[in-house]
View 1 (cartoon, rainbow, N blue to C red):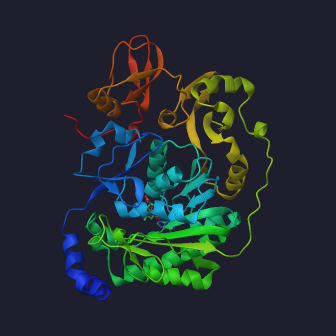
View 2 (tube, helix red, strand yellow):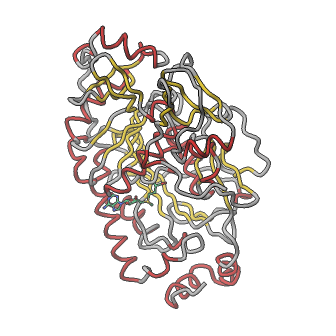
View 3 (tube, rainbow, N blue to C red):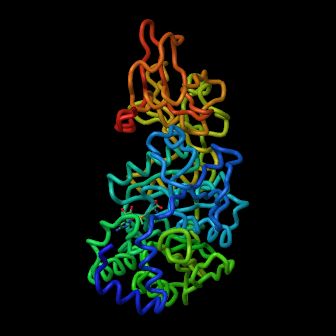
Length: 447
Ligand code: SAM
């Protein structure tokens, strides 16, 4: 790999006689890893596990994920292993036994959001934000596949969150960075790298952090991470955070055989030491500040569907009594955990591009059209009629071919592969319609 001279010089200063090993690692194949969705697989077989996350696993070689229906069903998320250290940092810094208000400020494509949602208490309000519109849609798709009803998404710059002062218990800023740690996986990142870009990234990170700290309640946890090595984006920013705001670094308990390097503040991963890419993470506790107050006691009835509309929607949903169904003018319905109503109303007042909970479908007169997201969601009722597909049928379904099956009974049916839902089919008098969304379909040749 052709690396910029000044990058090599900086790494020489940082790593000393480990430099040749580091450079050799960049020329070797990147390990392949993923983390499982604990709600879509109960006991995954893990022969080569990621040391710092029990649902993380290395694969011997890279399969064609696109051709695995379980990938489309959200059974796992493909993520490089060092990043999964977030799980350990969260485990050590927050109380996972109680519902939290969580903000993942730079969330797309969603690798760390899926981790956060799986780790924290299932009633936690997990708000996943992405400022870039096209990436926001990808985030939405990945969270839909993950299927957890406690995640919410927004499409804002960090400055737009101002009125949510003291609101969150846990904030992750997985910052946009110069990406030195991804040179092996994404050699294109090398072309954008120079010292000016590092400086630019470091200042941008400070701007975002400056908008972020205020959103944390006193006693709350801030986790700052990058996928780069240089000090201006990592330790220097961590140091600046501690000097500028009421934040205190949190020391994590790290097993020595993990081979993670402890810096003055934070933890650094190198590809010649760990089975993963370059990654940096630091965590802080907020020591003082204003606690955001939430107006409680909003009446669910005011926002929910009418009793008649509910009787149409409820048969599609598991435990509908725990949910509120928010309907927009086009009849589209999003399901929200009842316990999230007060928090949701406060967030909705502050952010205009915000979508709460799960889009479950559209009510047109007395007709409910289930959404693809509902099939992937843990909210879907177990009573819905299901059709189990073979591998080949599943791939044809995911390519949106018509018909995948013939002679299916009239009405809606949820198609599954190895017990996990992929989406909807509808049997009509003399044909079957495939309701997999066009924008999600597999474009690859399957034979
Ligand atoms: N957390 C993600 C994950 O684990 O899948 C990866 C996040 S990536 C390192 C950083 C994200 O920050 C990108 O999605 C990028 O679009 C977003 N971003 C870019 N500029 C930003 C800004 N000014 N404020 C907040 N986020 C920004």
